[in-house]
Image (cartoon, rainbow, N blue to C red):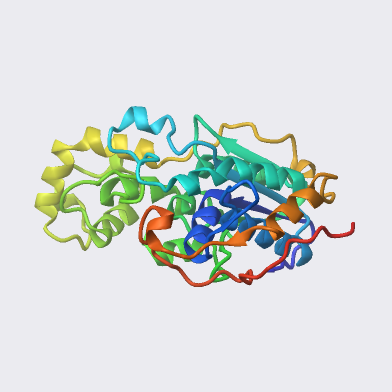
Length: 319
């Protein structure tokens, strides 16, 4: 696990939705005695146990209890649960129960999204002087807006890449504060909004690097003095679709006004609950099912194999 050289607490806030999708597409199917698919949950729980065994002391996990959120009311094309395999959706509540049994704080989102919870947790922890480092554990580009200097960073637990504020600028060409504007212009296919026609990543970065936010971009492209492709055309598109751009920015802006915990002490792991042993035995007893693409509802896109071995056994640990 990455370690800060500064004294104080290191806190890990984990994107449980991403982790569940990742393990679902990487591990063979497995069902428990009742026929419930559990492989992805088993993978995530084993991974979180690995964090704790590796020395993490303060951990929280955010999940999308339902995929839909308030953003679906703002934009018709925003992502929904349509197309998500049923045996993956059924594992979300099971994951939340398993993590609670493990003794890890869980934030199941209904009106908001897991990304909002991660942003809100990072913002709250940033105000706590006891916290030296905050790791936002997700590769999701939306969370780049929550990065602050070298204190609040993104951690891709699969690749072990850490992205601080300088890394955000190197990756996107804009600082964290401009990420919602950047996504509004270029779009986000994963979330279901298209951005503005003609606005590619390079042009958006070049313009926003100078002006920061959409409303600060001059209507006259001759005032841009930025290395943008077909600037006159881009300026005309922005003028015609400015309201849409601002709507997309609202979709991309993560909410930080969600109350999740009182202070960092609430995220300290104090060991598993008495119910975790039974949960671990249930997962260990799950039997493998033939890995056929149709069984998962779709042909999976398989990422790199997670670091948790496929034959991993979940065992309670002494504390």
